[in-house]
Image 1 (spheres, rainbow, N blue to C red):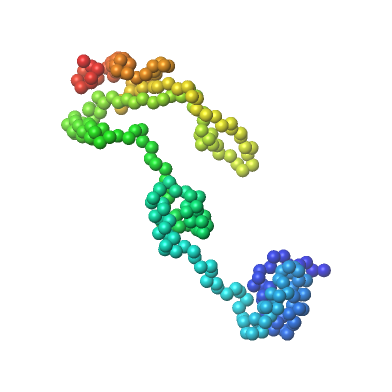
Image 2: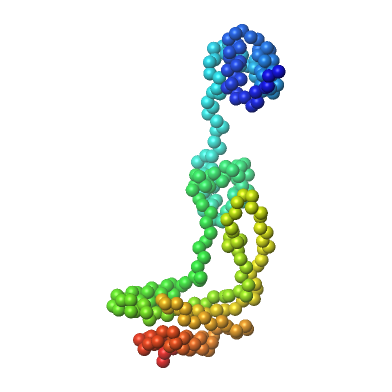
Length: 260
């Protein structure tokens, strides 16, 4: 007994129907032979009769006719309405848009937003702080002054620049998920990692450096805050660090406020 053919293509079965129809085989007999050779569910009897009639009427093509497809529900009015809603509130999500357009599917809305309107969901850019116009003008004036002095003195001027900043340092900073990523094979065992949070205990650290490296790292004591007295004490330590690590530098720094 021969083995049935599994998963035949539709055009293959239709070619068989066309061949047997040309040999004047009845539709019922064609369906029986197809069920024996392929599978009882390969094609229903009604479809076999349909294709037999089509081939008798002169059809030659065994493939599906090209179809125009389902008409698109994306109209110019819909695109315009979605655009207006997004411009009213840039934080709109697809879920909230679906509430505004209950008759439109989420897939269609996502296509309108991403493909038609070319919107992308972007996070706001994080900056240390928002500067006022006065702050911006002062920074611009300092930058221009630095450029003028650099053009006059060259790299020697860069040797005398010392800058600093403050930051919070947590007692425990756990390894992030991305930092713990490793190259592994597909059959390598999965390593478990418990989620940990940053320690609530932290301390303020003030750091000063120049083009050659770090000059001073100062940690604030617990329970204290940065005020004028504390900052002056830190600048005094910075002056001492410059004297020890950059000998001769202070003789050129007439503009340092803590040198006088």
